[in-house]
Length: 100
Image (cartoon, rainbow, N blue to C red; front, top):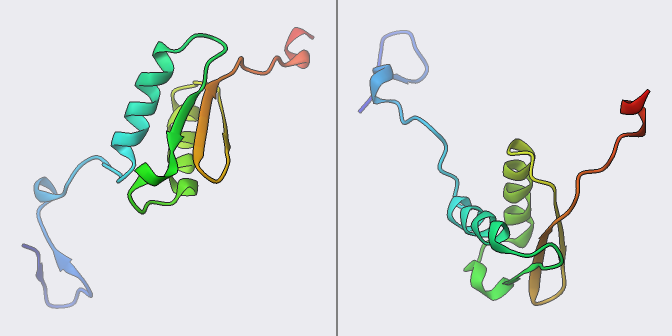
């Protein structure tokens, strides 16, 4: 465990003991959603029951999914109602200026 040294405000520790990589609490759910998306047809959506989020906020899961899909360049759309979060793939928007 880190120990506070003389003039520092916080404890010091060896860099080799610092945890690497972020394993957020939505990692498993996002991973499962991406796996399911890869198996869907072009006109299908995933229907995720909100009661299955075990107290997590739907907005937080949606944000985590958005971060990962932007990072992996997977265009998705989400929607929700009082019972479900829906996720489906979409085609990336075309950029009319790219043709210029």
